[in-house]
Length: 91
Image (cartoon, rainbow, N blue to C red; front, top):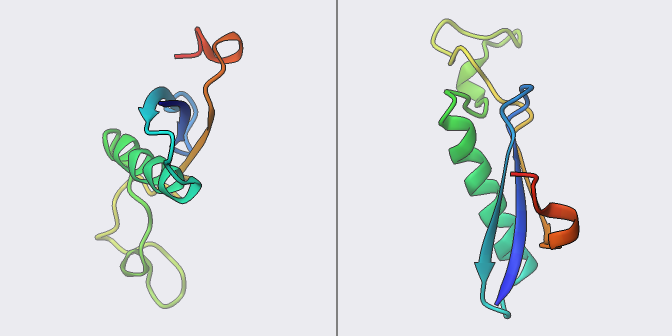
């Protein structure tokens, strides 16, 4: 099993999160990237932050009245191999 350290960033100060998840040894980087992105989206949504979509902006590039009050243009999920010396105590 591989232990992977994930960081979820919402784009707003104080709303980041970290977790360690175990995966089979044959997990691919693409699968880990996808997991990081999906979990980052869920984490941001728990704060009411949603990624902007084309429908959130009018033709001039301004937010519409129906757009969510918090848009997360900087929602990110990243991962790296878990290292207890580096990561313990960070979450």
